[in-house]
Length: 339
Image (tube, rainbow, N blue to C red; front, side, top):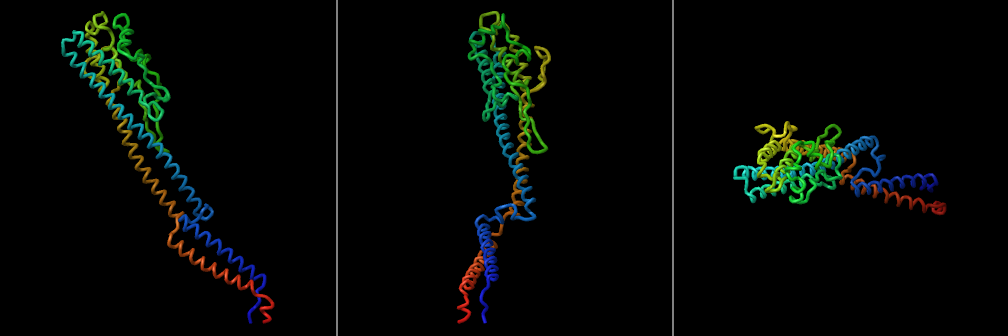
């Protein structure tokens, strides 16, 4: 004899069917997303571990993003330093040629002076290099161009600095006061939670200052006047000493204007190159660590697609059977029992 379904059995079967529906829905979500759960609660005891892994990964990725920006800044800085060095060397070569010649002809004198002023404007342009809206050689005043020589042409320059009544400053402090608009703050970058590097070199660095001073000393004065270069040839050797000191300190000979601040372009370039190596190694290390964290998190989060599909198919078949059984139970009545 078949028993007529009771309310209790109907309710129990309904509860079981709803559980199966949820399992089918969860399985479908897992197949679609390839994740075990759409919420941390679904990972049970491993939820805290997953959160910690994700937080660590997020912090590592932030450092990587910032370090890639710093890497670009260092690359541009090194390119600028290479251009600055070429400008200094090219002018020094011209000055050496001038020093080896007769040195008194109007064409020769004016030619080297024009070269000096041109080199000075090139230095101004390079040291005002802007990277993503920030001046690379301005120290902490990144929104302000650090160098302003104050003259647009050689004619205007020598009209002010006639080399006799008004001579160009020969000491560092007086010269800096004329052109430097930045500050001397050394900018640092945090590579990770423990390590930082100094990435800033300002336009006030002694290598730049000495080179620019040498160029201006040659550019001052007009031919045929008391302040003209042909009447002050000692400036040539003085400027050559400053240029040599700017490139690689200390050069031979005696400083023409008293003791100079130690430092040269070779040292600056070496510092930037070393920082590029450090940063490259740090990014490689962080990439490896980020991959490790990603894989560990994936081990917790991800499902095996084949297992998820099979589980969904099994649950779907069980649900179909449950629907069929519930339909059969629902049709049973007293009349069915009496027949």
